[in-house]
Image (cartoon, rainbow, N blue to C red; front, side, top):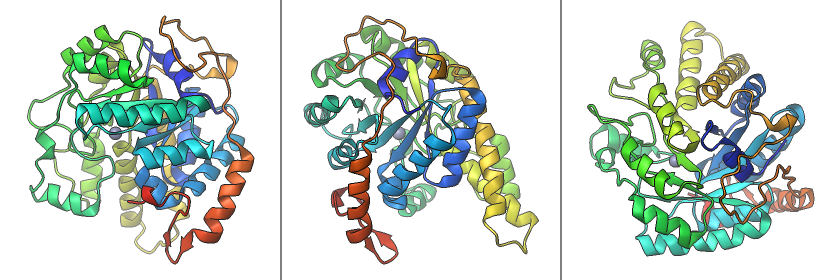
Length: 376
Ligand SMILES: [Zn+2]
C-alpha cells in the first residue's frame, strides 16, 4: 500500500528508522519489495534525477505500479531523492510521489530557504511532504564517470570537506521553509568512500539538532555500510575498489536512530551487491551470456539485504498493514497525520505516458518533453 511519507516518518521517529532505498531497475524493485514483505517493514522507494533520466520517469512509475499489485502487503512511500526545483515540480505534478527532496544545500542560506519554500508551496496542497537539506554532504549522490575518475586520481577535494549542519541554522531553516523533514550533514557522505582515518559520525551535532527540533524527522544520507566482506569478494572477482572504502557501522546507525534519525538513505550497498553478484557470476560462468540468471541471483540477494537492513533499523514488523499508530509528537504538520493510502492519478499517468512515448523517445536516449530541465 502506497502511504504518505510523513505518516511513515512520524510513526518511526524516536522508535526506528525507515530504510530508504535507491533503485532504478526491475531487479532492484523486485528485491526491495520482497525484502520489505519478508521483514514486514515499511520502506521508502527512492528515485534520483539521474535514475529518472536513466530509466525514464514513466518507466519507474509504472514499474512501481506493478510492484504495488504484485506485493499488496508492502507498505511503502515514494520519494524523489535530491531533486531540484524543476524535477520536484515534475514529480509533484505526476501524482505519483508521496514526498520530494529539494536539495538546495549548495546555495547560500537565504537562497536555500527561498528555493525550499517554493517547493513546499507546490507540494503541500497535494499532501506531498518535502525533505530539505542544510549543510553539505561529501561526495555526490549519483557520481558521473568523470567525477569517479577524478576522485580516484585524487583531483577531487570533496571527500574531506563536508559542511556540517549548524543546529541553530537548522531551527531557523525549518521554521522559515515549512519543510517536513530535514537531511542533516553530520559526517556521512555519498558513495563507497565515506570516511577517512578515524573520522566517524558527529553524533554531538545530531543531538543538538534534535534538541532544537524535537518534532522534526531527521534524515541520514549516505547510510550504506560498505561491507568489507563484499569489497573483498568484488576484489577477488576482478574489481578494483580499494580498501579505504568504508561506510556507516551498525552501532553508529543505532546511535543515530536513538538521536532522532527516522529515515536512512541507502544506495551504495545495493550497487556494490549488484557488482559482486554479476562479477562472481560471470567469473564462474565465463560462457554464460543470459542476464536473467545473475538477475535472479541479484533479486534474491538484494531482497535478503533489504530485509536485513530493515531489521537493523528496527523497522521489522512495523508495516502498516494492520493499521497505523502514529506517535503523537505534538508537532503541527500541514499534512494529515492519520494513515492514508496515497493513490496516484491514473488519468495523469496515462496522459503523461502518451506524451512521453510519442514525443519523448529520440534514438537510444530518452528525452522527457514535459520537463527537459531534469535531464542531467
Ligand atoms: Zn543523498
